[in-house]
Length: 245
Image 1: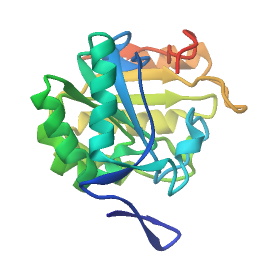
Image 2: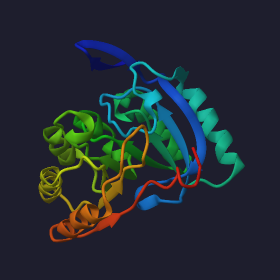
Image 3: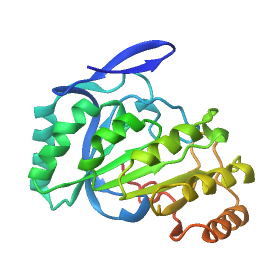
């Protein structure tokens, strides 16, 4: 099974036949360019980061979720697909790229079923991204700011963009702790990408004491981004406003 390192110990998460699954459900995409699209969500357990604004904190521990077979996941997806039309599967977490051996055959199967693969990732695991890139129809890459994670992940993000597919877009969650220096780092990262990357500014959803970025500062960041990035959007998280899972 695929391993993740936490506190110097490698913990087994998944292999080609079994993986840690938290839940599988149908809902509307609440973020990014596919906002409002009906998707089947497959949420995998375990994350290599711990963001203070995380809206799925039960998925962070390694391990979390339940060990499920690939056949179980396929069966659940097929059952949901029979209830209504879905264009894509959102592979999410936690951090789904902790499960590349589990995801690869499932993503291939999804394509055979006529479903697109929408991957949601924290953008810090370039080796796994490189392996799965040919199978991804969209990659939602979060850029994680040190003010929210307590960690510097800029180098990992640069390495990730070098291997990410060209259908990748970047989302940055902005809280009241986000600094101008961090935003300059974000713009430097996007400028250095090997292909044009759409940029989504997402004011943090107020969860667990986290406060969203003040509107004026967010707009200043947006204006600064428009000087160097071709496609820029300010788009908050909507599924909380819709009261959806």
